Image (cartoon, rainbow, N blue to C red; front, side, top):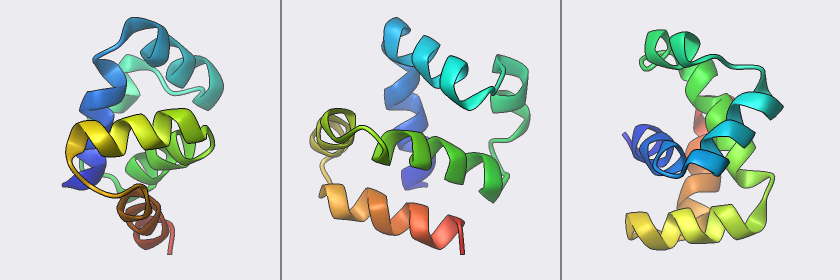
Length: 78
């Protein structure tokens, strides 16, 4: 659930969403189709965790600690 919330936060800003698509190679269709796919959600969290300013901003916006997002990523990538 946290990964889906993080995805929503990422997509809420056009430049950030464009960067997500450009750097991950994901497409809008792949994102829609992968909402229940742990690998796709893990890739989204990988992207978020790779850029600390976004990680901190997302955590703040979602009301969680940055470590919670990192832990969610580790769980999905396990």
